[in-house]
Amino acid sequence: VQLVESGGGLVQPGGSLRLSCAASGFTFSFYGMDWYRQAPGKERELVVGISSTGGSAEYADSVKGRFTISRDNAKNTVYLQMNSLKPEDTAVYYCNAPSFGSWGQGTQVTVSS
Image (tube, rainbow, N blue to C red; front, side, top):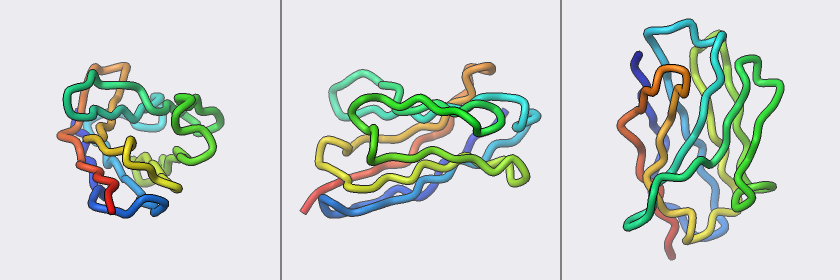
């Protein structure tokens, strides 16, 4: 199982970013996927999870209404659209395949003016 995140960067407060996670090594369309984040000095936290079909998702209260998860099973990719970013969203964002306990390398998101 391999997960490769991309799309992080530096953005001003109120800005947007779209993260991608390319998955390989398993039948992607069969499994739910999660995005986590870890801010400096804090524990890794679950941001959102999406079902295998993309038909349902559960968001952390801190990102509801601002972040949107989606997936393209034909491309074996899960996305995280992040809007109205706040400085407290600054973290390394990780893709996770919970059924396999596998993690990507993470992508840094920094929200700062």
